[in-house]
Image: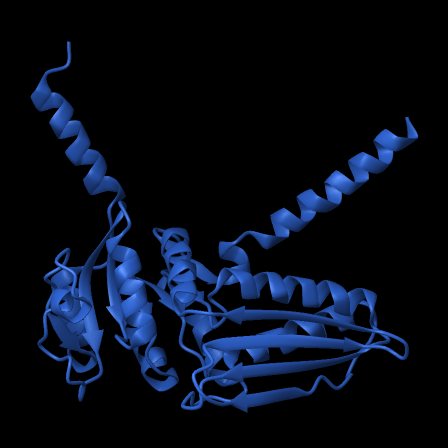
Amino acid sequence: MTSILETFLVSVKKEVIYLIKVGLIGLGKTGKYIAEGVLQQNNMKIVAAICSPNSEKKGMNLGELLSNSKTDVKITTSDELQATIFKTKPDVVVDFSNPQAAIKNAIILSKMKVNVVIGTTGFSKEHIEKLKNIPYKFKNGIVYAPNITLGVNVLMLLSNIAATILNNYDFQIVEMHYKNKKDSPSGTALKLYDEIEHGLQISGVKNKPIPINSVRAGGIVGKHSVLIIGEHDKIEISHESFSKKAFSLGALNAVNYIYKKSGYYEMKDVLNLKKILREYIDSLDNEAVSSQI
């Protein structure tokens, strides 16, 4: 017969095994939504919160910043990153800072064998190539996800498929964000460009222009549209975020995915879109076979 003490020890052991220690870099609107999201998870715990060196949040209690009593983590700055990581030992750090800082942070974190989810946008192609190489050098895991919302990844998949099928149509991308967003085009728009270009190349079409139009106005959280225009008809696929809470949901999925993994990944890996699409195609094949019997 199992004693109460044994039952308690088993439950504690399970909690220790499965609790993911999370660090946060960047405590703007998106960072705060992610922090709130982590605090609502049963398998995660915030152990570090990091702001920019000149931020007014330096030294604050994260719980006070969020008006949430579930955490009392003290906010430190990015120039103390190595010391903070050494002290708090996070399993995964979610970085929503800026491109220059994120690259520097990724190198420091990877050297310390910490896995990283990067939602920062505005990277150059050279930066992205550097990010891809970092986890293979230091044997940790990185999810690069400028397109961190779940819905926008479906938009990317559909755009890729459409480009493969409708390769004689014209493609244009329109992205809209709040007026103070610095990078233009957005990182998501650039990823959409890559997905459309890839779909066209699969179908044998190369060097087709894919214009990106950027709008910066008001308080638009984020909207991306793909216009697919032929001689006689038009298709428009779009995704719009109403709240930055959508980014939090994607970040939480990415944290769960990259925990204890190594290598470079993107959100399409986190969501396992290839498997979903393959299963869908298989189901169509099965229906076709059944109808012939």
